[in-house]
Length: 185
Image (cartoon, rainbow, N blue to C red; front, side):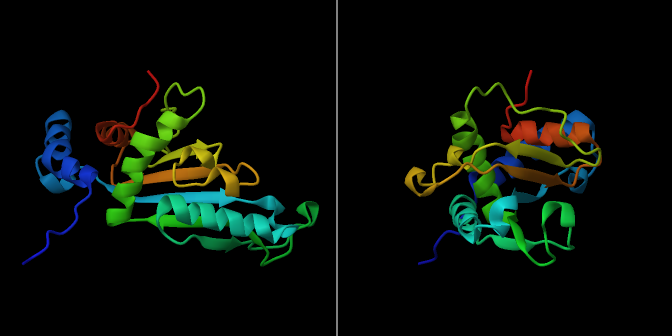
């Protein structure tokens, strides 16, 4: 008895509907020209980790919980005396999601986390970088249902970057909007 391989819901949506819609909208002659989501990068910067290493452990644990992948600790590249920072001190954590985990995270982010944001009026559409990538700042990690409220000592903001193969911001916005990203009107 063969088991069916797990395919994320948004990946099926991309293959069955989004590709057709984007080909029609932008007039692509080949399916390979249609932009796709390549990776999602989630970063948390913790400047206070140089004084209290437990903050870094908490950030890694919460990031691992809501992304489904172990977070990598990021260390400072050089010493900066004004910030009392030495080279090699841990200052943040990051995760790069690809393939199945990327689509699962995007699905949970759009359908579960974004509706839990306080005073939400839509994500800004001005955060594109000119080459088809979109970066979104999130102020609190408690919007993710996987994070346990009792284990969080302080709110940590993060940057979430959606890297696409789109050549322009307009194509990337159309791709993310097709996935269900709620941009401001």
